[in-house]
Image (cartoon, rainbow, N blue to C red):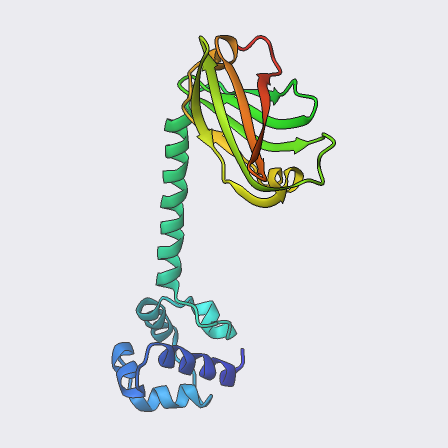
Length: 229
């Protein structure tokens, strides 16, 4: 136990709380002279004073005696820990209520178009279906052609009627390969079941425009698992 280090610690606690020696002494029920002697390493507070110091400033006695106080605000730390605990509980309850008793099923998406490779998935729960297309890659022979405009749309076709579901960002002055690098599609809450694959046709149309001439690529989308119903 080093009196000088303890004195420095007491001074640090006082300064941290923006108190003069007189006000600090008043809080502890001692004289300002006693505080001055502590801070100069000439004397030590007795155990009852240390306990009062702990009560007033929320600093453990062992930290004062060991000189380990490092600008800690214990009340603030306790509040932060409590807030974090409440947040964790809230998130846990939210996800429990949101997904409790839901059965997740995952299916991969594929395409029968040999010029394109599609990477995607269908996620199904008890009350919704989400379709995500992560990547569409062109594997054809015209990968060096630069098109003035490129457009991409996801359609559903049923009874010879084509319905637009969603579209992606258009491109300009780009090859088909470069354009598709950033192509992503997502569709939430489409159907509870997989009727979009069993009763309708789902496909992507990519329009490429150059010199006022439009070439359209049609990419059928199918689900890899035939048991989806």
